[in-house]
Length: 138
Image 1 (cartoon, rainbow, N blue to C red):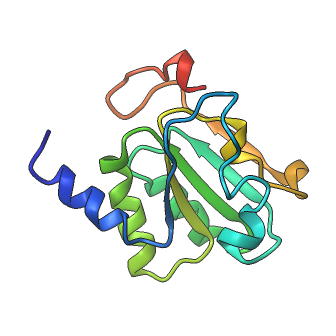
Image 2 (cartoon, rainbow, N blue to C red):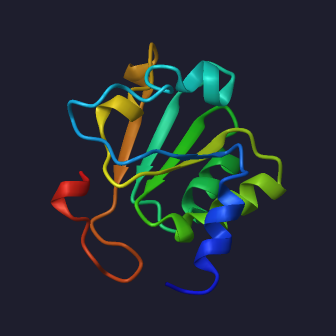
């Protein structure tokens, strides 16, 4: 583990724009944000756009800046990577972008709520190192 990884996790534990979801199984109880992302996380009713496999989060931050009337959630299993985007968004006071660090994407966490028809999904076929997204992550 790199020497900065633990400090990045500690930083993100204090960020309001980062949700660190525990590992969940499909039969686990729903996360408290289930169906509540608009109200509880973003505080608005704007459409939500997901980026699955967001890596460092630059794409989410860039889209959130370009489209301020949409909400963006970057999702990745590598929490230390997303620290970069989360830190930038926090420093810039961006309220329409958040990050979800989770080991698997489950419906118990990501169900957006009443505006689910507005939700878009982005999948990358490979991350910045060229590794394909593993099937168990999808």
